[in-house]
Image 1: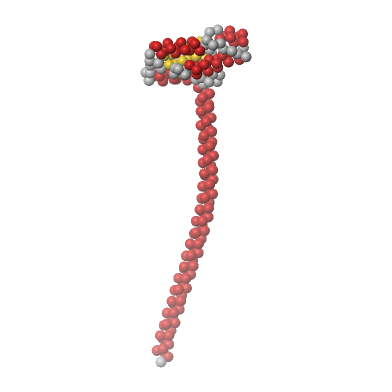
Image 2: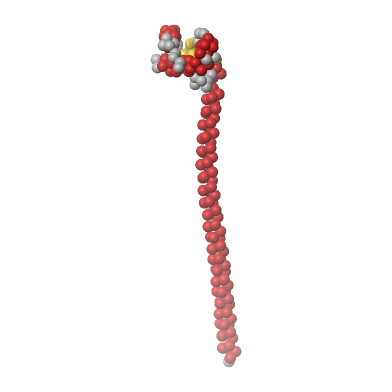
Length: 193
C-alpha cells in the first residue's frame, strides 16, 4: 500500500524538483541576461561618452579649420591683390590691365584706350627726389577717383610714369569728354612737402 502512495508522492516530489530546477535555471538565465544587458548598457554609455568627447574635439577642430581657411583665403586675396596691383598707386598693374583689355577684346566690347605719360617725370625725380615722384604718381591715381565721379573707366599703372585708361564708351563724344576731364585733372598743381 505504501507503494501505491509512495509512487505518486515520489512522482510529485520529482516533478517539484524538476520544476524547481527549471525555475532556478530560468532565473539564472534571466540574471545572466540582465547582467549582459547591464554590461552592454555600460559599454554603450561609455561609447556614447567617448563619442561626445570626440564630437566636441571634432567641432573644435572644425572651427579651427574654418578659421584657418578664412585666414588663408584672406591672405590669398591680399597676395592676389599685391600681385595684380601697383603698391604705390593701388591701381591695377600692367599685367592686370592687359588681361582686362584682352577680356574686353575677346568679348568684342566697344572701348576706348588712352595711354597717359607724365611729361618730364625723370626731371621731377632727378630734381626733387624719388619720394616727390612717388607722391605725384599716387596723387594722379587719387585724382582718377575724382574723374570717376562723372566717367566710368578702368585705370591702371602701365609702367614708370605711364597710365592706361580703358573706357567702355561707345560714342566718340563721351571719349572726348573723358579725355578733356583727364587733362583738366592735371591743371591743379601737385604739391609736395
